[in-house]
Image (cartoon, rainbow, N blue to C red):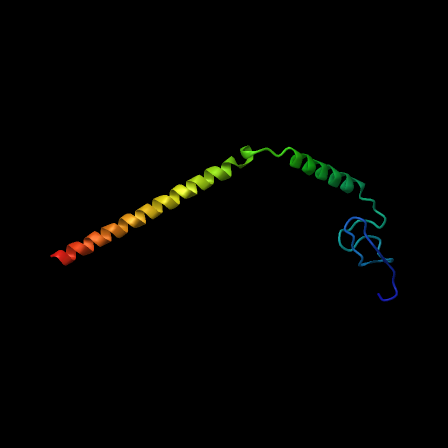
Length: 100
């Protein structure tokens, strides 16, 4: 393979293809294939992504995250309260044992 010329696939841009190969080693496309539909789809996706970035709103998109954070804070508060109540009960129980 030292003396063989290489060609680049226009779809996957692989350079491992040699002149004696009729199709790309990686994607299997024929040599000289023009991926116009692929490029058209990429342009469509990119334009859609740019439109979506322009239409970003305010807090309406993040209400689920905010509700989840509020629930998380409530759960952490409840666990902290339960732990503190348990510690009080243990302290009271220890004082009762020493009093007897």
